[in-house]
Length: 255
Figure 1 (cartoon, rainbow, N blue to C red):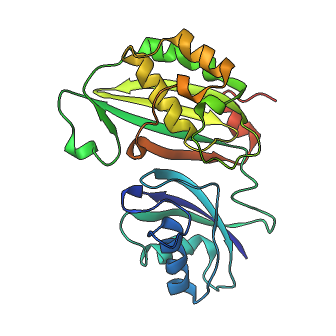
Figure 2: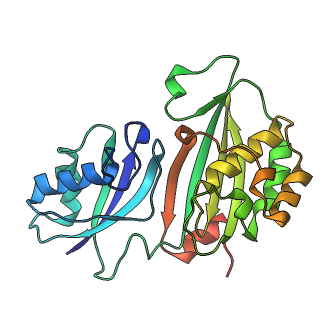
């Protein structure tokens, strides 16, 4: 049967999702847990890679298995073999043609920022700590230029293997809770480090290093040198993956 898992993990101790020769990864730990539970060596497919230090609340994974363990019980079994910073939050049988990667219609990422005179030890693994208070309204003004279908070359790190840098961003939502600011970006797909560069650019606008108009011109010029720095990985979390375009409509998607 084909199984669909929803995975949550703290990426601090991992070299990202995908298996590597020189780092421990989330995929490696999950596939080891599946072997310990079923005796099968399988290859898991995720909705997409997350980089070293990046977290997930809603990563989706698919794989095939011959196990007699009911799909809905697999989460409980797998979690007994996983480290505490990785958990299967849900497991279910999926259609035979379901692919966590190729079936994904869009994703929402959240970037978390802690603003304070001193760093927060309790947020150090999950937030980017800055010591100034950004102007959220200017960040929101800038976000309007990012929403839509654009060539996002200005928000792509070097080393990307993408065939095209055109993507559609359906929504950029910015809100605050106490001393924290959250940036949620929903799109049909993302380039290498794209959300972290968006976050770094919006922060730069918020603290006065860039203006909204300069960001608009950077998008038009497709010039990476005109946008902000790549924000650090610990603030980024894959929040949700969408497999139904009706779900994306909630985030502003339109055909």
